[in-house]
View 1 (cartoon, rainbow, N blue to C red):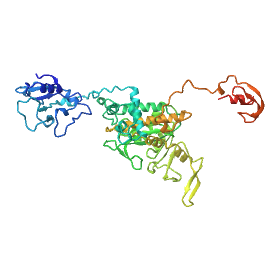
View 2 (spheres, rainbow, N blue to C red):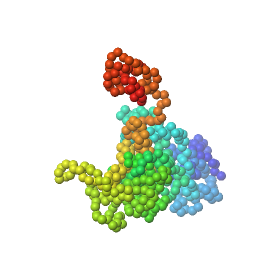
View 3 (tube, rainbow, N blue to C red):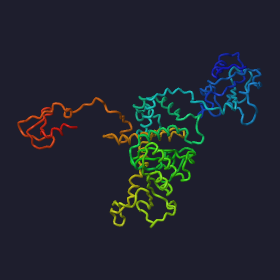
View 4 (cartoon, helix red, strand yellow):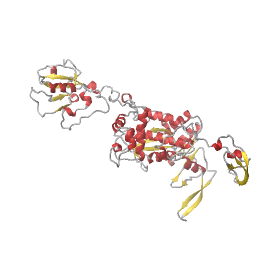
Length: 515
C-alpha cells in the first residue's frame, strides 16, 4: 500500500531524500472538496509549480507512487481509481513539464489528482476550517464598520486601513484589523449550506429574515393604519430573482414586499422570488395574497382591527371583501379592469399629479376638506375640495417610500461578490432604520438619522445631578427689604426663596419648585 502522508510532507520528503524515485502522487479530495466556495492556486492558468498550490490541497492525504510500483494498475481500491475512461471521470491534472520526464528524477514532475465521483457529490462540510473566533462584541464592531461606510464612503473597503493620510480611518483601524474584517465578511453565513431548502431561493437568508420579522413585529408602534408596498435593493450581478422596475429610484436589484407604518417603521418584509410555495391565498393573485399574508402576521402578533393602504398593484374588490370579512378596512388606488363591473353611479376620478381611481371600505367622500393646488391657467395656488378617501390615501400611503429614503440616504458602500451580500446588508440597514424610528417615537430629545448612525444610546445613568431647585428640601420663603420681580409670575413681590435666592411669591413657590 502507498504511504499515507499529506501532500506537503511527501514533497518535502522528495526534496530532502535523493534516493526516492517517484513517478506520480495520488491525492485524496481535500477537506473543502464539496464546499460551495473552493480554493484557487496562485499560479497562471497555463501552468504553475508546487509553491502555487492552496493550503487545503497541501494538507490533503496523498500516496507516493514510486517507479516500478504496480499501484497504478491496482484496481482493488475503488476509492481513488476511476471505474472507466468516460468523459465524466476525466482526471484533472497539472504538470510542470511539457513531456513525460525521465524515470529517474528526485522531484515530482507530475501530480495526478484522481477523484471518486461519490466524493465530489458528498454533502458539503460545515464551514471552511477557518477559526473566526467571533464574539458578540467583535460582530458589533464589524456591523459598526459596515454602517460607517454609509456616511464615510470610500471606493474600496481596504482603503479604511491604508496608511495614506487621505484614506486612513483611525477609528476603523484601531477597532479591528483589516484581515479580521475580511475573514468575517468572506465567511459570514446565515444558514447551513448543507441544509438549504431547494424550493426557497432565499434560503441562505431565511433564518435572518424570519428572526427580523419576529423582532420588528414585536416592537411595532401601536397604530391603526399600515401601508404596503415594494422596496428595491440595488444589485447589478446575475441572479434569477433580479428585477427591473421602471420609474423607481433603484431600477435594478432585488424586490422586497414591505408592510410599514406611516412614518416608515417596517414591521414585515419578504423577498420576491417568483412563485411563493407558502402562498395560502393564491386565488387572489400575487399582490392581494401578500397583503393578506401581512395582515395575518400582524393580527397574530397584535390582535385587533386595522386599516391597510396600498397602490393599484395590490388593490382589487375581492381583496377588500376578504379584509372586511376579517374585520379590517382598506383603501387603495385601483385599475379600471379590477373594479369587477361594480354598479357605480358615476365614473368619477381624482385628478392630482395623475388621474387615479380610489376604492375604500373604511373611508368615503365625506367629510370634504380643502387643499391647495397650483392652477396653471391662473399661475397661482387655489383651494379645491378633496374627498376624505383621497386624504386618507395621501396621508398614510408613503411609509415604505420613507423607509427606502432613510436606508438609501446612508446605504453601506461596502459590497461583497456573493449575490446575497446586498440583501444581507439590506437586512442590517433595515434593522438600524427601525431602531431609529423607535428612538424618535420614545425619546424626548431624538437624534437625526446621521447622528444616530454612530451614536450610542442606552439606559439613562442612575446617578444624575438634580438641580437644587427641584430637590424639595429647605425651600423657605422669607421677606426681603425691597420689591423685585417674581421668578415664576414676573410680578413685583417682597418675598424670596432663601435657598434659591430668587424673588418668589408664596403662592408661586409650589410651581417654581416642581420639575
